[in-house]
Length: 148
Image 1 (cartoon, rainbow, N blue to C red):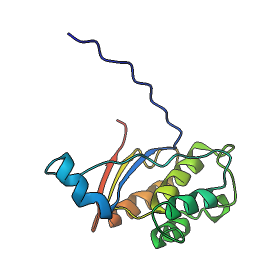
Image 2: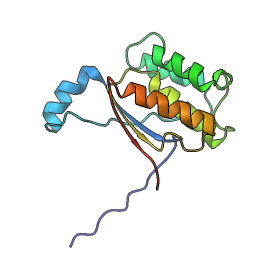
Image 3: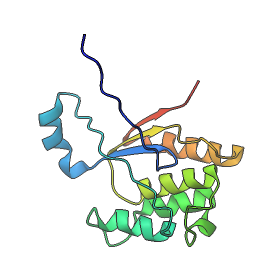
Image 4: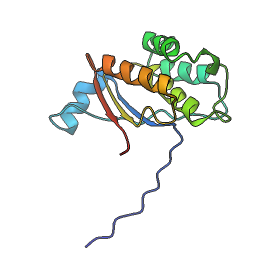
């Protein structure tokens, strides 16, 4: 029996969010199997760069001139305007969780895998995140996990 290599996991994000770009979905689906689901690398949170700058980087890296309307909507729904000009290093777990969500929402996607997307959030924001993901699932693939 072969010994499995040790895998180190790095969780620099508040949660794990993985996106699939619509432009590449067909090519990748052909390469990776019949389901058409491919999970790309999650957005990383840079502790020393403001959330607004990280959202802009995520958007421009995907050919946009600014973050998506979904990101703007999520800022309003989550009531987290105050986080935009802050760096994540001193933030609470819940605030970092919101940063991960907003960075993920700043770029276009057709599928989202979210591991414990409500971890560390207060009850009001947990409800807001759950409702938004439920609404997004009407026209996108959303897979969300929570710990037991």
